[in-house]
Image (cartoon, rainbow, N blue to C red; front, side):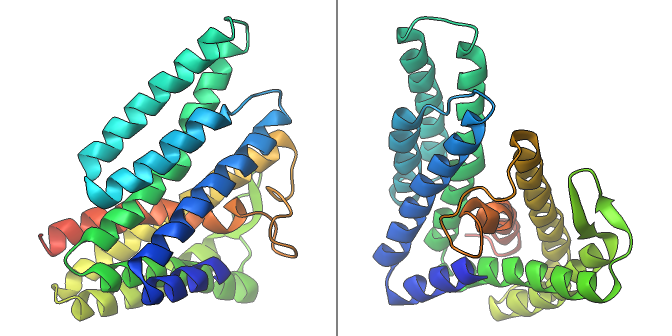
Amino acid sequence: MGLAALALVTLLLSDTAFMVVIVVAVVLALWELAGAFARQNRELILAPAWVGGIGMVVSARFLGLEAVLGALTLTVVAVAVWKLLDGPTIQTIPDITVTTFSLIYVPLLASFVVLILNSPHGVAAVITWIALSVANDLGGWAFGIMWGKHPMAPKISPKKSWEGFAGSLLLSVAVGIGTMIWLGGSWWWGIPMAILTTIAATTGDLVESLIKRDVGLKDMSNLLPGHGGLMDRLDSLLMVAPVVYFILKVAIPW
């Protein structure tokens, strides 16, 4: 929620400040993932990933979704060429795969936040993304603390429960309906938006937990003292962004 608050504050200051936060978050998140994968002797090829990741976010702002996908494709090609120029080894394909996954997981998903900002509702649409992400976290935390007894995926994230998922869903539905009315759309679009964002946020949490478990980490890093790493806070925010973008695009065409 701290990152959501930072995003909201910079968003209200200016679009430029918000874009700077997105770019910095992408750079640091890729760095964290590189450190995590290195524990399993996998190299996230950072130099082209950083350049391509920033390019994807900037493309989202000025050129749109097609340009983002084009930038992703060019970056994957650049990563492959970069690695092959070092000389093919047994690590080549795994390293390219890890880097491609990271490009999709971080800068591609982050680009959808910028695409949301580009919508006719701009700031209000981004606030909707933030509100749904916070609702998922708050609802899951509250219901999980009070009633959580049935683990959702005990081998991946023992603390995540079905009761917490229900809490995330209920609060997200309330927020989804409210924000959809606020944006001038049909209220009922808030229900599928809430359901899909809850599923996406939960998936993001589990994917990040799976990565940490696979590499033997409790937190992605100590970048945020007392709160773990940046990816520990970004996981659900990133996964929610494309869902909000596509739902709003259908529910409130632009």
